[in-house]
Image 1 (cartoon, rainbow, N blue to C red):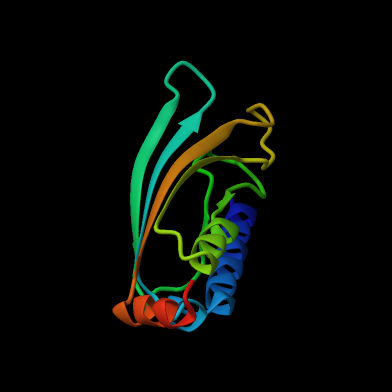
Image 2: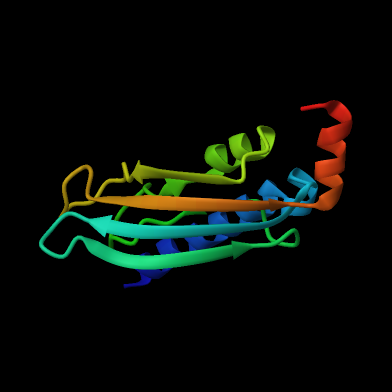
Length: 137
């Protein structure tokens, strides 16, 4: 029992460090005013829809976009939306839909035991629009 508590504490400490290391959205993506991430979590089995989730991200939020796998005992899994969001901002894209599969390990489930469908919407500051116009992008 104590080992599980220590593992949980270590995981939470690491997650907190990773969030802090990611920096704030306002620092990493200064032209972004708002990010909305809609996700549908799926699991293998007779009731595939595990959860619907919406995450609102603001300039004051951490620029940490790794979502945990919702399957109990999944180790090392999750869904990292960081490259998706970084590419969207780089290309000034406003909407993107896609899917990711969890590659974590668990004793009780298959290798591809969970997945998500995501729909990401990014709103940019007005300054960003003017900056793009000046660059003729």
